[in-house]
Length: 249
Image (tube, rainbow, N blue to C red; front, side, top):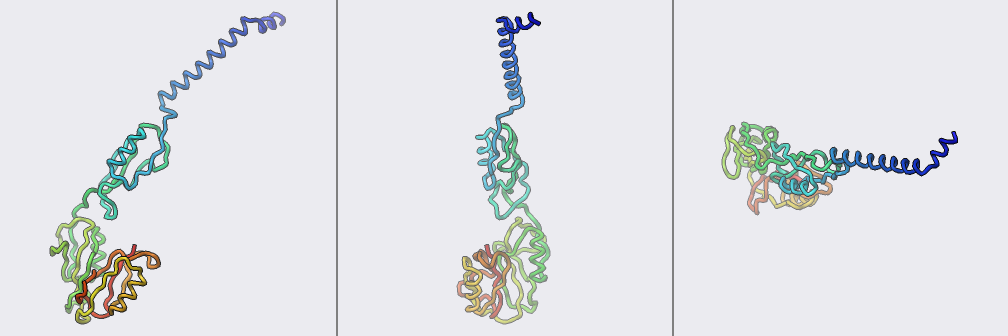
């Protein structure tokens, strides 16, 4: 026992103990460094919010962070977005990922695909609008014309060009419909309502001998974005008490 105590107190044991401690410290640091090098541990980035950017700008922003932007999908066209605008990403904004990680991007299609116009002539306006929406089309303007077929669609136009059932049109296109109206002569001019509140537009139409029909949007705070029929610039466009449809945003 005495010899063991003397050995523990000896200079030889102290030197060996220090060397052993240093050895294990160096070994631990080396193992940790090798692990980081193999796994890339510690080299992480926060994924930025890329929504609203073009594909090229999003890829450049990711490259600055040592991330890679990869196009995942561009099959859908959304009318409210710019062509090639990013509207979805994975991983989502704020996610923490390792450097070199791929970020999958979904962008708006450059041009809408072509769709075929459904048969909407001699159908009611409500049915025609429903059929058009199912094809990704919408009604941008309605022109009422005197006709015994009250409330039925008589003609369809796109950019001044008459269309028939089966015609190919870009998805998202706004069409002009001519609708029969048997309720009287066209005597009332349609004023410009864009930018007005719902209440202001309603009051103005009442002074013009017309009514108002809400289609979409918040009537308490939003302004009118579009109307149908459009401003007729003082020319008679509707019979008395007919309604002007409005969309608010």
